[in-house]
Image (cartoon, protein in one colour):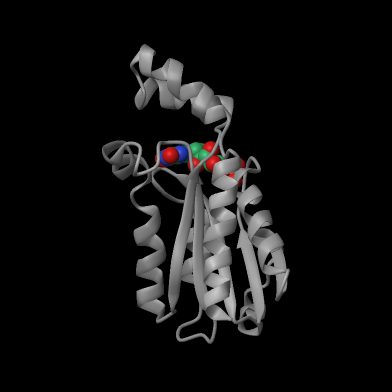
Length: 180
Ligand SMILES: Cc1cc2nc3c(=O)[nH]c(=O)nc-3n(C[C@H](O)[C@H](O)[C@H](O)COP(=O)(O)O)c2cc1C
């Protein structure tokens, strides 16, 4: 199977997940890891599986990835996996904040897959550290309580942690196993 992992990453967090996917997939398959800026859209037809990674921006996937999704061909032979990193809590940790600040990411993947008739095999997401400017924004607008901030900030700065990276490995490992 020929697999493409294409990602957009401004501060290197989503890239960490892309690299994990590449490591796992390349054990048994031909795996190509590419930054979005290096990808030629015409080459997509070469692949059986395309994994697409993005940071979460303004509760949705980043704009360059949304633009890329809009250009995907209809009825391609490739299947699709999505992955994204975000600085707000995961759904399990705080459903309300997650919905408000991360909630559009999965629908953007699934709506694209439905519209383009692409088989969507699932998504992976995890918390990841933010730049100092985004940390400030989060404190000002999202996690405004100082006591909560004291526990949130050290947690955020450690993310993605070993458990997140393991989860990414397991997620993609399981899918690849099923695909055979
Ligand atoms: C412009 C901008 C907007 C962001 N908006 C959100 C957001 O709405 N929700 C969130 O959880 N994280 C948000 N973040 C944090 C990023 O999703 C997070 O730091 C991500 O892991 C960065 O990935 P990257 O290093 O691959 O770019 C934002 C970051 C930036 C730079």
